[in-house]
Image (cartoon, rainbow, N blue to C red):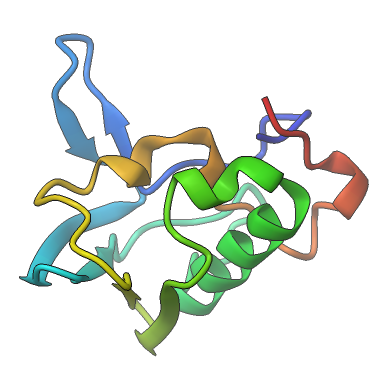
Length: 124
């Protein structure tokens, strides 16, 4: 997603291809269309500033704007909001499965808005 590799994803795949939290501490399925993502307390950007729920929401919006294929990850009709400084809520218009696999995709990369220009975003 980023040309210069200054972002991370909410989830990642382990060497044995198991989904694991990365920037996220955990992801809870609230109901079939709602996920709550709790960020790690110690999640930091490369400059040392904390990763907040607002940063995650803004990164998803930037990625959606830059990548026409982002709708395949999470519907652009989804509502992504910051519940509190460390919790993100994703509400999709339809049931999207029980696993938070979308959090490990490059399109879910979280980067600091102050350190990345729109020209640095690149879709695969």
